[in-house]
Image (cartoon, rainbow, N blue to C red):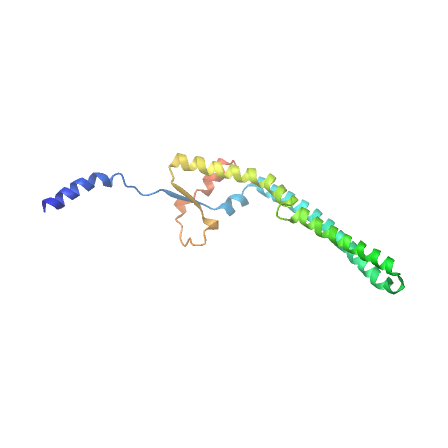
Length: 170
């Protein structure tokens, strides 16, 4: 019995040092939807993307037209002219593929444009979240829009509106 009392007496003060982590949640989709600068950036990206897509489609149509013309004239052409036309067609198709890669590839212009427009917004959001977490002493802030395992969320833990206020959007 004395041992049990000694163990309890020694562990009781340590219980004060153990505390639960404070967790908060944000909804990044909600935050982005309510930021006018994000909508503006997306509109700019859509405009640029459509312009580049038209340019690619035009190059593809030119290649298609060259192919169609070649097929109708093929029987009247000499072997040298056939080879020349085939090279023109291949060059035009290659040009269209190169434009597609240049604009929409992994390191393409759209990626660079998106990064230049969206990254500053994401940085502002991150900084606002970090400031709120430091002020309110949150240990963890999770994004509920990207957490498929989240089943229930107490709305009291959602700081999305605080982030928007900090960013001047509400």
